[in-house]
Image 1 (cartoon, one colour):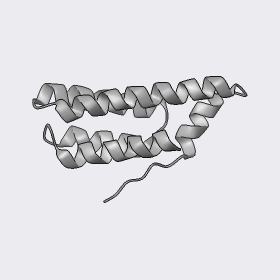
Image 2 (cartoon, helix red, strand yellow):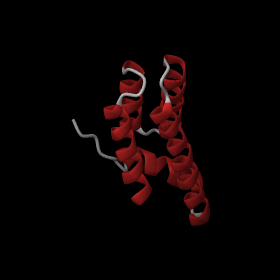
Image 3 (cartoon, one colour):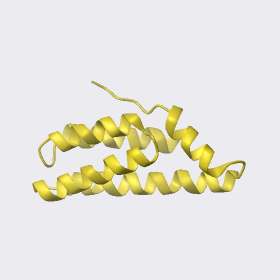
Image 4 (tube, helix red, strand yellow):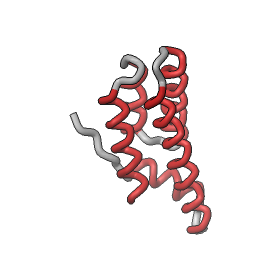
Length: 102
């Protein structure tokens, strides 16, 4: 199952927070991407349950904060997966790459 980035609620949340300030919108997008990249990196290097679960929970919190439903779904999959699951890490990286290029 391939999950792609959906611009709807996440972009709307960022736009609502930034209002008419395009500079602020850019900063919020970068902050989201940076936070997401940090958690994906932590997941990719996690080999124990504790580190994996912590990074997955942070991803879920990030997703909830920005109303990013596809990311919430991926974070929940990560919570149920074994540490270092390459399929989950790849799907999260794909989400990150797609969001960062839009």
